[in-house]
Image (cartoon, rainbow, N blue to C red; front, side):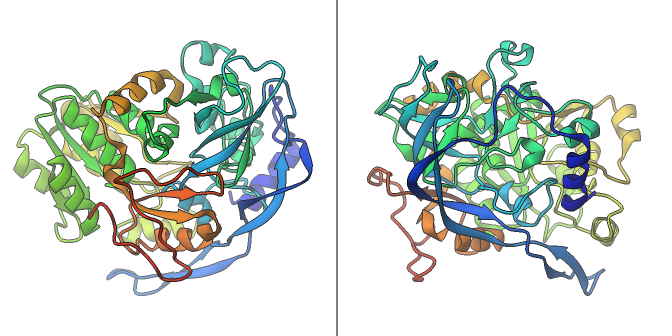
Length: 462
């Protein structure tokens, strides 16, 4: 099913009822900059030794535009001026039109923080002028899942009937992540409307700069959650596929949990260098080591206790899954999951924190059963469950989010940033994107770069 078909299916099914709206009122005569997605089609050319030339349809059209500013629409709303935002690896799935129910003009971005600018009449926990970070998910705070601390599975904020049909029940609405996730405007903008602001905003103390607080929106709790789901604990060995921000943070959390060994698997030299030099991981470069599983068994003869897949469904290695994805026989590749199933110790644990969307082929289900493996999808991480504890760890210095912060860019260069990030150019690892409302740069964090002018600072992490 592609985005066009999914949107038509949603029209036929009708939206699920929700406790809030994804269509806010607008402030008259006020505008802001925001990054919007468009549906222009294009092709890119994939090649490898097995597939000399394969043409795959894609979409890589995002634009920074001037749009109306949202207004308080419901009593539980909070409007924030954005002081920090970023681009995430999962945003690249949208960039390549790989997640269902995108619509032209959607405002992207699920990681953001800001200053409260206006509040609805029912808001009690925050006030105008407070510094806050937003959870990437939108939780109502009152449904059974929210009461259990499972905010990412809120029953009342996702309007997608398509997701309900596909999964049985949908996860919570998300900021800036398609109508498959509720169709809410995101944080790659100068203002954001936050529904249920008392639930989805966390006040930040003055001792924590924006460059650290921003990542409490997603990647700090998501990476921590991945280690919880993999049952990482003292004395256990851990292997992590994918050394993007989530994988690197998961490696650090594993180290802090007392793991006996952390093995980092990737092919990007800068990522592997960071994992080895700053976190202390053993590394495997899969571009040079073709049999990753054999390399793991050389380090851990019984297999690793815990595996974390922090890569993604869109990355394929061989011809079989490359072709199947290209022609629509599967949406997700099982290659990395299968490597985890083969590499993990008998009765070991695997957590899938990488984005997987729908269907895969050649899944090694026999190993799952016969080795007694616990394979757990992390789901979208329940941010609010961990927020306060993780903020304490950031504030105390026990966990330093800036170990992966490589660059700082202005909001009007988001289009160029997506392109550079997608191509893994300039050593971009994780960015801080500033707006007109941002505070001055915190000491020790990257200075402002410009992709438009070519004035790009050397990566602060490599």
